[in-house]
Image 1: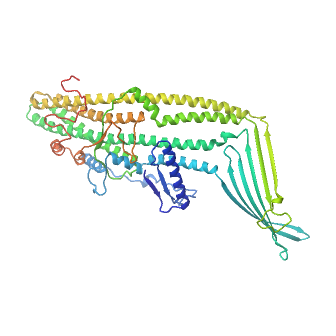
Image 2: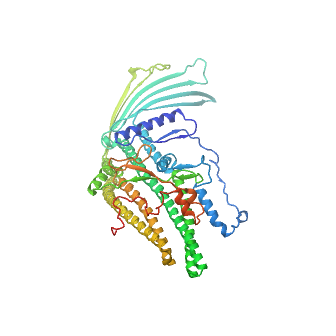
Image 3: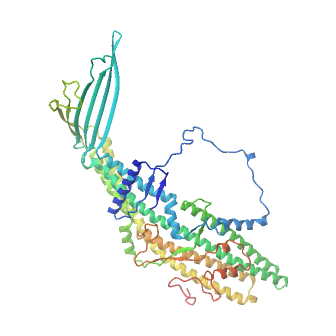
Length: 613
């Protein structure tokens, strides 16, 4: 876990509190079998006092005539500006390499743990639960208090006032008893001096030591008295589970965002490839139209597809830029931070799933389900507490007091055991009006029944989610197989059309380009969906594990590999011309099918072209 420093200084008191908080969290996490790498917060932040007490905060709202807008330039300059702005915003080019932040998937996950706002908030919720337990534990420990009172008084007699100065110091210690009640010890020192008759007068001093105890035997006694401490202890365990569960969900969500960015880049690549191909085709159609070999409407159809492809490319680039900036915000980075995704992704093998075993794993391992189950126990305890409040009050108390010698006006700090006094009492309170308490019993019973039904519903929904995500892997695998088959069919169709170019009409060629683009986008979508489906299944079944660095921990029999593919940002966000495809293949031979039609690696079990799907 990252340690966040607030300010440069740290008071000794807060340092001790931080150490105790971390030690308590680590101890409870270890006892519960949860990760012991607990979050920390150190330091004493300075509070900015500027404007704290201003009753009229400033408002900025200029008049309309104070605003200014510049009219946009010629329309022909817009596409070039879009390309340039998208490229810079995507950190494709235009930034010094020293300022550029390049993140792979593991780097994004680690960056999120350091700077993500939602991650830090989850850490702080965990820490606050530990602090609440420390506060409650302190209430059940010995507590010391010291009160010093200085007072002056006077009384008049025929215009003459006798004035006295009194000093009373009370030192006391309190201790809660394990099953209700409290013990208190007090040392009281009194000193009185007559201010008018100083000559010959002496300061009067006395001391008193007293011990007292009060214990409830019925209402408020027993384990009911320990409820605040018990619940605080349990709440810390809940917070530890919730934080670990958040780390797993957070890993999946950040990974999904990362995969979607890669998918968006793949869509830009596919659209650029189609645009380059359409540009070449449109030029061929122009030459044929000029020679009178085809009609002008066929040329117009080809040009229309070029304009549509260029508009789609601009839209996809802009969508990627917006998604990347949202990803920056998700990571806690400033929107203006130059960031580039390096193209790495996880390679996860689809697990062989036994549905019954998956549901059993979820029932055993899901941390949120365990917390819901324990909250039912809390509600049962609330019923017992409500019933205890209906009982009559029966309290016993006792005390003993030892003061200084009553015949000695200047006793100092001495006490005289011979002047001790004691008392004992028992108080019984007849429960004449317990209507509110009886209503609270019924309220607690209804709340318990609601909690039990809520737990049953949560468990059933959890099992439904496990079954859905398990089936989702099979569905995603099948969709990927079909998508790869579609890509293969349309690539062979395109090659055949290119070989028989003179025999194919314009509309058939354009439809082939559109179908190939859809097939490639569907393949990239399916590949992303399969990775997401595997992560969702691991999460829903409680089998996802996160390492201390925030990475996905490999499970036995389910290896995790990182696959890195080159992303040429300069080409993806640069100007696309007729020679773009040739240049792209030259730079990235492994990114696009070659002349023999070898595409992206197929998943195991993908149908061959001759299998008929």
